[in-house]
Structure formats: structure tokens, C-alpha cells
Image (tube, rainbow, N blue to C red; front, side):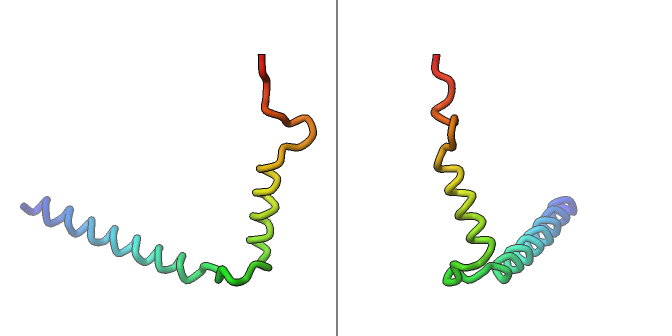
Length: 63
């Protein structure tokens, strides 16, 4: 039984730590209403580059 209680204590500590990390990340989020942020702009540019193949980048090798 002692091992069971010890495991429950470890699980509770892990859960508390995960909750703290989640809250911290939520507090750091940039409001979605600010489309001019540098991170969002960089992400949009990156997504556009991934969606549009450049010169010489077609569907790949086809036998």
C-alpha cells in the first residue's frame, strides 16, 4: 500500500507541474487580434513557402 500512496503522490506532483506549465504558456500567448506581430508574419511567410513549390521543385521523381 505504501507504494500505491507514493505513486499517487508522484502523479499529483506531476499533474501540478503540468498545470503550472500550461498556465504559463497560456499567459504568454499573443492575442489573436494582433495580426501584425513578427511571429505571426514569419509563420505566414513560412507557410506560403511550404505551399508553393519553387523553380525546379515539382512533384518529385517519377519513373
